[in-house]
Amino acid sequence: MFVYMLFAISIGIEGGYNIPAVGFQNIHTGTTVSLCADRNMGIVDLTLSVQTSFLTGDNPSYTLNATGLRLGMYKGNWLISPVLAVGGDYINRGLNQSSETGFAAAYTIGALINFKINRLRIYPKVYYDGLTDFKEHAGFLGLRMGIAYGI
Image 1 (cartoon, rainbow, N blue to C red):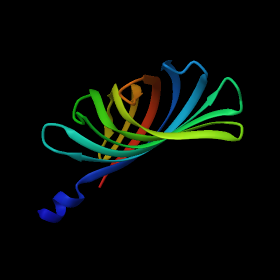
Image 2 (cartoon, rainbow, N blue to C red; image 1 turned 60 degrees about the vertical axis):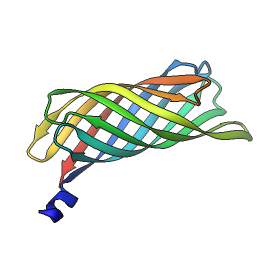
Image 3 (cartoon, helix red, strand yellow; image 1 turned 45 degrees about the horizontal axis):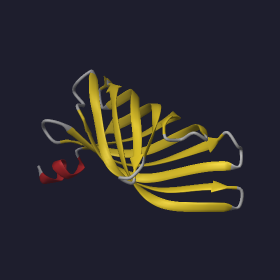
Image 4 (cartoon, one colour; image 1 turned 90 degrees about the vertical axis):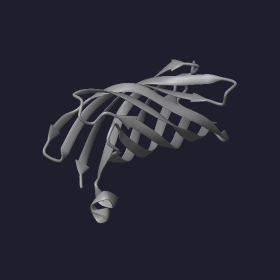
């Protein structure tokens, strides 16, 4: 039973597209990729994910990379489920040869639609991905497609 509890997880990958919503006047579009491990904890499903986002600006020399770790929750047994996640991101932005880095608190609020076939789960997700240093705020609207397999 203990071994089953250790390995009763699902692993997955998500990929998607972001557009700036708040605070990024010079960002055009971006892509995001996420690797995640999910575990059903009775009432909710918890997910631990590592994600990276790459965004380009209106100026082709301007880039923004955000890589972070998130802890989130959703309802895996609902057809339409709310999604909440919090964590931190390491951010690197650059223009030509100059760049700056920093850390930001990150959060995700959205919804997903669960499609299940045995152990395979396929889900589109619509979300708002926010970044803050508790002084300023910025965020993206995004659409991701995810696939997960229960072990």
